[in-house]
Image (tube, rainbow, N blue to C red; front, side, top):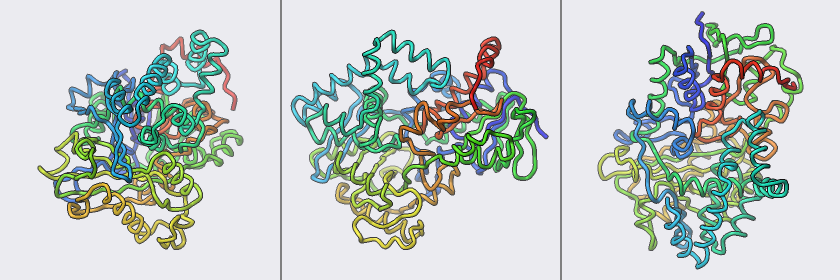
Length: 545
């Protein structure tokens, strides 16, 4: 039986950041991971395709992390452990079917020029929207970096009221609910301007016609200009190794192949956990679970006396669309078609898309259970930033598809692919990948000839890699408004505290949601290390079960 101040369930970015911060503050910390590698959705492989090619098997890009409070606080430690980020002045672009392209740069001046190139007047529109966003950026970013269900959330609301006034606050709040379609259509005259921004809502777990997708598009547009598209040299594994090192150097432990079976509760308080082989880990101050609500309340807290209303609410937690990935090892650099081929080749992340309507159509087809006829292809080119990930002269592509049905596939929007009983068999996986690669080959003229090896990861494969990715949902739960912001993870159990004293809930299923920003791990670590008098005062505030 081992004993620690805090025990983390799962080793994703939120757990590792939270554990590192607590360890630096003198806590004895243990992180338990069911897989044979740490990192959660950060998983780097040097043998996925061919020798010499380094692939990010799941997540790949780190702008949310390098722009986070967690990174600011841990940067010196990470630098000492050799974590080096590289960036670009051309973070993203979109390649359209007619061979044209559009881009977002890392400067206001560059974006004004680029959007004016698309349609005169859209450059000024970009400048207006960016300046308007930055005027209240503290509130916008604050929504995504504050524990909303807390005194901090109340303070943020009070600050917004003082800054904006009653009517201004109502207008600001209403603006956060606007869809991406409405915002981009109102703001830009060019279909290309709308088309370069609309695919980004997929990275927030939303579609372009959903509430809050316009707000999230504005957040991402600002973040791209302010922060670019950084990646760690050598892959995300370097960040994972460094965070693990902070924990272990402070005397903590990161245990692999430790599948947690149950959270132990004594006298209404989380006291530790038991793993599947029966070993027990005591937690004197906190248990922090980086899991989905389904796992937390349906498995780990079984028979723990959790209020039935919370258990039933967890059973109703919805998962979102599925994801699929395709990893390609190329014998040469990709050659894009069109007048903007050189810029597309320099761009680390290109969306191959027909534009706003195309994204909307593909999302709709996926949500009706169909394989989309013309999916948005997220085409990552990591070697544009980090050439060390492939042998000299060669390259890799990281393809992400975020518009796939949740659960069983009901059919194919084109009627061309036989989906069988709807299960993600090897045949279905490869048939759909054939469609995607053929489409991408219309934009990258040497794709077929240059491809040396292809590996496809289906939604079923994703869940096998990480149990939090239920049915291939890479965002660990629908990000629709009723499961987002104040209502994430559950309307009946919002925030990161739980009905069990000493038990905290973090991860993509909790606020501020998915991504590599480490927001929930950071927020809980900060809460746990508040001065004791603040904790005692906060403990007097009753929590409704």
